[in-house]
Length: 361
Image (cartoon, rainbow, N blue to C red; front, side, top):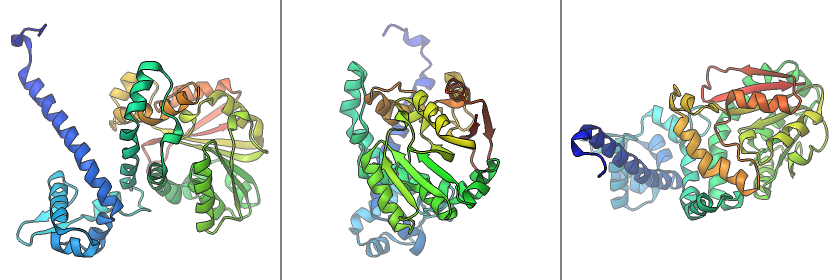
């Protein structure tokens, strides 16, 4: 070793080793979380618990030996609570709100479904590190899209038309009386579906460059009973938007765009007089030190998500690769460069994890 052993803080080294073991343990628990989500084990515990391993096996129709080992791991990791006298396991209601209640504002359990594709793409990502380029969006399959859809849906259900849209000057009334809205980068269509549900007189569209997402969005709209009131198309917004609108929305999208500058300019051209662009982004910064010091500890998530998906998919499409950590300052610069004259930040107390911008001009 280049550094003398006497100069090494052995307690610091040991502490970091324990941290790494803990993070690897979390990865292993992630596999069990994934299986639990696929087999609806959290829902079963929430609805039927407290349960012994034998009872969970019977209720969920799984092998009893695996039920016991899964529950034991979940108890040691703090997902469930264990009663040693009764030999039962309980999913606390607060944990159920996070893991199994799909309309809860705290629901993030579905994010685990995105993880297998990240690991499966490790070879492609390694090659991108060596040679540039990235992991194309086509490498992220149906389970990834379903997981992200389930993760993002509660925010739209609980907030989009109840809090976010009413905060935009004049937009709520426009949509109530037959205005027009398009969701750029609509993914599986959850935001557009909520808009079509809340504003039946409005013209609602969604566009995305990924055909598989649009196919899912169309089916989701049919399942939600609004298939005749919302239109979804494969379209690259950077080439211009189809039509003009009172409201354009970009939910967790701007930082993903291969060509954000061209897209923002196209959005500006598409806005009707008095119309607005509404943008949601992660509450991160374009400054590394600010992300290291993030009060919610989101910096590591931001950069890791960027390398695994946001930046790499944009680079795979020959884009600029903005990355997840766009932040307010950089977004304001982008909006100004695109010709917008006004960017208003909205803060919603129930959502400290995102930044919200009303953009006009």
